[in-house]
Image (cartoon, rainbow, N blue to C red):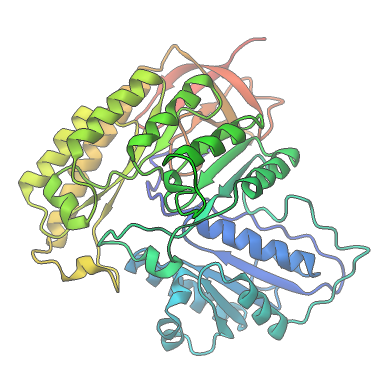
Length: 457
């Protein structure tokens, strides 16, 4: 069993679980999926199309006739990681197709790795398929190659990401995602619900709703007749009727988010909000080109908790943004003390090629960013430890993620896969399996994790 602290980076998806079944002579394609859950969904869609065309999926380079590397371009460090992964795939396999966010900069990739077979941008599925066809012609056998109705999944069978929109309409100075993925484009309501229905029918017990700006879902539809926010509320209600856990990620704190919280109090949606606040000082937020009314976010947090007292709030912050003074940083620490968020992650600011924040004056020295990051995470850890200690002696519902010889690794409703904590059961776990949902009495707590025992039935 693994224990936290986790990496605390919400831009990272769980490690892809690549299926490896194949018939004799079936062409194999390898897949390396980097970056966020949205990129993981893109990888799943590509592999689903490939499986439907008769390709097998290889979990390693050696067994593949070509390798797809789905890249990340969120930060310069993520770009470097993507280039390293491309280089490794070229060394180990030699036939590499690149896609994903970094693919929006093809010259950057081919400048470092001129031998890649093709470069495509994010969610350009047809171009990826064309490149695979050119490198490895398909050889389908319709009598043998059966594709599950839910498609190919790169996550454990009991949970799945559900992407409801592409792109983003915000102009945050530190972010280039809108440049790479375009403006907001919401998927049709019925298409999202039907995909969710198929996933639940296939055994998924938890749906993780993702997009770049989940609360903006549907606001791009030209024929809208409802008030702002009604689209995501209607979608959340319909998803909640399917019987699976529904967890909302990347919920921008618009005022109408209040309308989602009663669904959590009713039990239709998990009492969990992943809200990217980024900072608390109004001047820092203005330099980020984000709403600068930090005091209003505290009012909204209080309102959400009044409606649904058990709500768990996760957020992400940037430490050391250009121009951040010690006083601005202290405001962030004081805000965190008052907000008492349940789950917190942070980044040390770094330049990203093409981001407007690069040109801002007064960049914070690396050593100051690192020192502030440590202070910020120490405070966040202390808040987390106190909140989890308060759960000792309570009964909570958990979902099982993994079982081994030492025990069962589970998550509460307040914990998303990989980025939040775990609850461990190290006695009486016999007979449990991934996807089981059960009630546990909490017996022990640490800064990020809980330990408990099964409730007797």
